[in-house]
Length: 480
Ligand code: NAP
Ligand code: MG
Image 1 (spheres, rainbow, N blue to C red):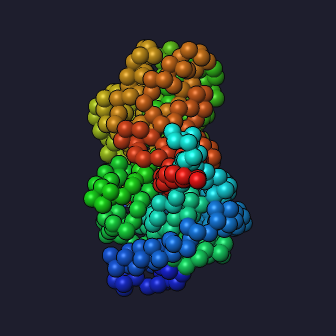
Image 2 (image 1 turned 30 degrees about the vertical axis):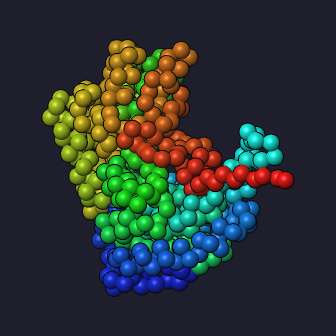
Image 3 (image 1 turned 45 degrees about the vertical axis):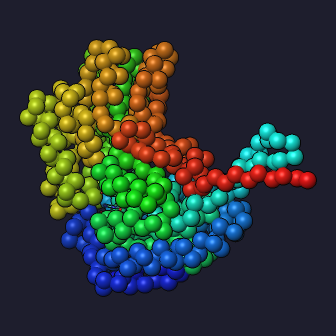
């Protein structure tokens, strides 16, 4: 069984603890994919020291040169889309098509950030005083701690590492414990792209040890985190002790509102795609439908018909369209939400059970619920699984109220042919991203983020990322 190692200061290193843990395949938990380090605080400190030491030189490398490294990295991602995608499917479970798509998307984001490295501009202001020039320049933030989740183990780390490098920062990267293999592969591609020692360091291990230690370290200037709101709060608290900057991308309870839809078939297709991709384990997954009473029956019928066509199985098989959940714990969470919903009067229209006939994998049937009470947990809390509750409403006001009656505020979709309604929803819905007649799919150069319990700090992707990865410096220059 292969033992993988951390990557610190340009070298692959065994963890100081000497402890390794198995990484399993969620489609077949008996299959161990490799043994991965369960690192300790010492490893984190070594990685931070390496990142700190490399920082001085790396920030002096001209931006366009840093961008060239990212362009090489992006090309390598494209070239490795098939083998890296296969590893992604094996350790995460999503279907091969989604995995390859994720790698390709990561390449596009890395390429955009390579370009940003040539656009790290500041501003020149008119002065109050004659003969004095005023400039605001941007400088690198320093050492970045990047903590990523398991649901997008390729694109999320790239979304953190690429802007960090473009902006002249160095990185300590802690991947999720469930998906360390793709992290090792990403490091190998970065090295092949010409990464100097210490500029990106990989430390694998648990969130409570490695992640927590990274967040608490005063040598880390910024923590970029994607994951649950509960962990985000912990990281924010830890970083606050040393006034570290944070960029937190957290959970969501994203609604699709359907009211006078231009085409119910099209709306249903967008909803089902956005709800069940990655087995519903996406922060921007549509996780509830709010539909007018007039359209509810027909929309529900089409959604159920589409969901019944989903073929669940091992993501490696070509006919599978939805893979397993990441872990047994997530399976239990989905079950519990559905059981509670049923107990409070909801009806299961399809799914609502584990698929044990598929073996020991963490397979759950794609599920649609009707008659869901708007104030029940299944309607307001994040499930992070393939469960779609449908709620019917009488009016636009009721739809907006239900939409906003959650602690989250990440994304929302609205399907309507009425431009006034569309703009009213766009104005009233509390979310970072609103999609009109469009599923909750984001683009690779467009700012991405949430409000309320869905996020804190600068939006990632696109030009706004620089607001997190760079700091301002003001220069007053008197010319005699
Ligand atoms: P999680 O438990 O918060 O884990 C995310 C990462 O944080 C993992 O690497 C984890 O390490 C680490 N971690 C755990 N405890 C930590 C601590 N005390 N200090 C520092 N790091 C710590 O989330 P998850 O269950 O893996 O992911 C699902 C959640 O992420 C969902 O709520 C989802 O909405 C959210 N998410 C949001 C976005 C977005 O862009 N907004 C994207 C994807 C996912 P271990 O793996 O070792 O526990
Ligand atoms: Mg695994």
